Image (cartoon, rainbow, N blue to C red; front, side, top):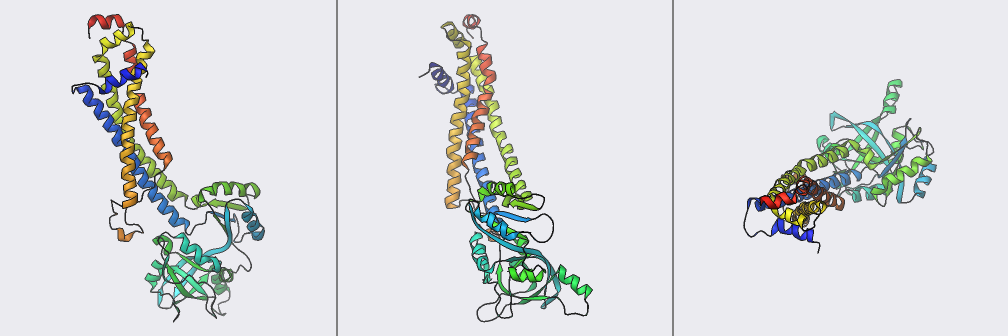
Amino acid sequence: MDYRFLIARRYLATSRRVTLVSVISSLSVAGVGLGVAALIVVLSVMNGFYDIVRDLLVSFDPHVRIESVEGRSLAGADSLLGLARSLDHVESATAYVEGKALLSYSGAPDETQVVVVRGVEAATFSDSLAAGSPAGAALSGTFDLERQGDEAGIVIGAGLGLRLGLYSGVSTDSGSRVSLLSAPGIERLLTQPLGLPPLQPFTVRGLYEIEPVYDASHVFIERSEAQRLFRLPGQVTGIELRLDDLERADEVKAALEARLDPATVRVQTWYDLQRSLYDVMRLEKWGASFVLALIIVVAAFNIVGSLTMIVIEKRRDLGALQAMGASRADIRRIFLLEGLLVGAIGSGLGLVIGLGLALAQQHFGLVPLAQAEAFIIDAYPIAIRGWDVAAIVAVAVGLCAAASLYPASRAAAVEPAHAVRSGA
């Protein structure tokens, strides 16, 4: 074993009596361990919340969306569907119609609501909605949008349904009947006031619950009904892609943008669709990381103090080592190794404690959420990222090594003859 490592370890941990230097060194190790453990736990919790929110939104938002830059409809939808389905990692591509409309209910005439109407394929809507929600989207009724006789189906959010007093239909009776009035319908009403009201009736087939803000403003109908509502016969407003791995969204987006004209077609990933929210969550994550990293910085300052005191205490030994042939670089390396040892031991302890707490929370839910009945989860979520853990350990060890640079330089500057003669 390298003699420099043996000396560094002896200076750090083999003292037979408790001294101020050993106490400060122990505090440094404890500080590094505490900082590493806190960072691992907190970042894992924030990653867990990020994953919950992302999965919740992606249950409705597509992995990749193609839409027109200008105009209400997407030109060449059939060719775009063929192109999208030919790309790697694309599992499905479906066209949709989307627009805003006024929703009214005869049972609550004073509660007219502006909603976002999404026209989707009835055959695929039920499976995609139920599979996309981690909590199970259905509250009551079914996700059936197909027309049954003269009644077209609609699925609305639970918040909107409860506020208007709507109920969903079951096999023995019909649900509440609502009407939608689109912007083209309003235009027709103003230009043809003596004609029939351009209201389109629907029967509530189901209530869903994903996220309160989304639930209160989004309703789903069959695509052909949406084309009729918005006066878009045979046209669509966009195409949604589902991938085998949502992390491939940027790759698929780049492949589409390379073949499409960005002046006419816009391609957005799931991150682009909710960029402001995701950016805020990431900013919170790195802000918390910076604050908790101050624990490690304080521990690094302790390393400066403890190693400087070792240099003063061991000055005569350092002079003797140089007299025996050790170079100044060797002396410097001894103290750099001491800093690395503090960082490695502290990071190792923090790694064990942090991962242990995170895994315990992940499997046993030790810390429940306050008022958990209002959330879709009952305990703080955990998502351990290997890259985060590696970065935390690397930063901790790097800060400890950097903290040892000044004591190492001071130790290398000791004059051997003067140190041995002075006996200090």
